[in-house]
Length: 390
Ligand SMILES: Cc1cc2nc3c(=O)[nH]c(=O)nc-3n(C[C@H](O)[C@H](O)[C@H](O)COP(=O)(O)OP(=O)(O)OC[C@H]3O[C@@H](n4cnc5c(N)ncnc54)[C@H](O)[C@@H]3O)c2cc1C
Image (cartoon, rainbow, N blue to C red):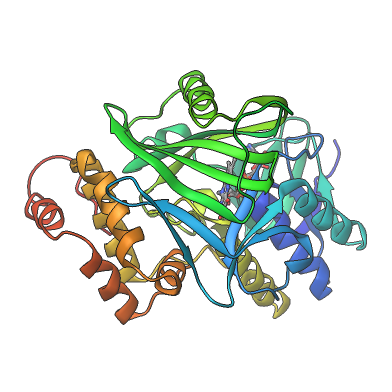
């Protein structure tokens, strides 16, 4: 019988969170033996990561496009444009990120990526973790679990963010063109029986963009329906597609109940399954980068790994209440987002979206919104039905 290979740290899942941590460990010269276990056999460009940031930051070299302005729909459906001095909305192509991380890992002799391996069981015995994959057994002192949440947990989220997008090049005869100076964050807002729907457009050039249809909905909407809605959006805007470069789609949890961050002593959760996605927006990339930096520092200092930290009580309450209002009163969703775009200055909006809102920013956001729906939802808290506010 073969003796299981022994590691100081095992990272379960080599997606954004797993690779971000491995990359930080590689860059910092972490001396321990590490393995990342990942089911995929090859990395492809499977998603686009966007976030607001200043020009200089540790991953600035990976940013392939920046926009200094963004657009959103007012309540009356007019489009409004906003900006925040010194900050831009930045786009990282996922394959560039994966390749950068893989290169950092390849430059070490103590961190290895095990592709084509799926974790099927994790147990702990005598201070050691025993990890079972389909065809091997591994042991480790510490475990960071970045596997996605199980479907049963996903269904407990307050809302789902469902989207389908295509990176398209327009046909030469296309009547409509993209406007490459500003992204469309939330335009064409409308509400139907499935919840809120809006468009999200990252224009890379006048004839090339990522165009997405997004929904915030209580129950996931199927990819086929979203695909049909995307066709309608392209037709409505006069964007005649010449070629589709790639497609992306997802169902992201919004307001997942806070997970048990350390399911066993020495094992922590991170990434989406650890609560990394911002409940009110589904953004997670920067939150994962901050966690990866802090976790790698802690491991470097000789301690065990760090779980994805929970949000502040204020942010949890605000996001939880906002999601609950969207769920209870979906007909108000275009008004709520429209008011926010209309009344909240660009810098405040960016700080709010980037987890950096202070008290005065929070008050500014609150005062931009009608109070009645929030009071109604707060009043319903004691009654049966979903009412998770923090
Ligand atoms: C299409 C898309 C676009 C997004 N756009 C943005 C954006 O613009 N901005 C933003 O901030 N956030 C965005 N997000 C949200 C978030 O940043 C990403 O979902 C991010 O990839 C989350 O990282 P993660 O490591 O938790 O999950 P993933 O990157 O999905 O990694 C999880 C890994 O676990 C692996 N795995 C699964 N099962 C097992 C198993 N049994 N054993 C071992 N490994 C396993 C998977 O193969 C995967 O590689 C987007 C998400 C998606 C899906």
